[in-house]
Image 1 (cartoon, one colour):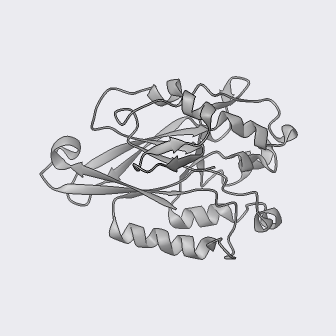
Image 2: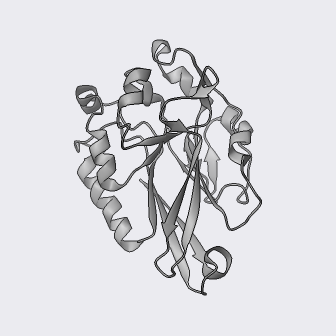
Image 3: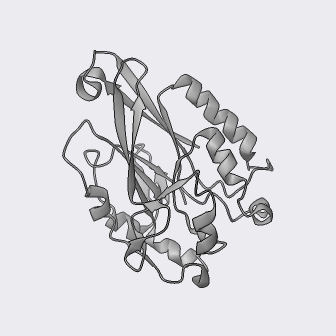
Length: 239
């Protein structure tokens, strides 16, 4: 569970007063449908209580998932992720990246699961030149700030590692194209405004180096993902 804290002053972002607001972007990743607590798996109950505590501290918040929401666990194998929409709805997750395990039960199953609850964001998987059903490349969310009467728009851009196709059964991703040309998707719509909050929601492995900088854990993705803070405000990732 990751929380990105974005400080915003009324002068630059809110255009209101000099109060400073904090927007908490809370990211869950690689849940794998593991509802039951065991060993180092926290379980749905602990995740729910942790998210609720963060929400209480930061009333302006956005809860996301970086993918692999189901699949890859025995409990998920038994339930096939069917409890996931109820859990995500309870913690307020509306948007998710697509992970490789989303295809464990095939494309038709993925298209149906949680279709009224979860919108998947992923601009670099296509089928016949089109995005997958229930999938958008990005979304914009308006969030009310507690210290002013204004709202802040947060743009969320979804990606999956192009290498994830190697971790899926071929029959489950038949006809799908995983593109590694990430940057046109990231820079699309970028207007140069320093006040614009843009979150990269990616099912791409990252780590934090000794200087607290985010680094991609794969050389191919590192070469393809080159951008600075003027392009992306924060990264919510997992793999």
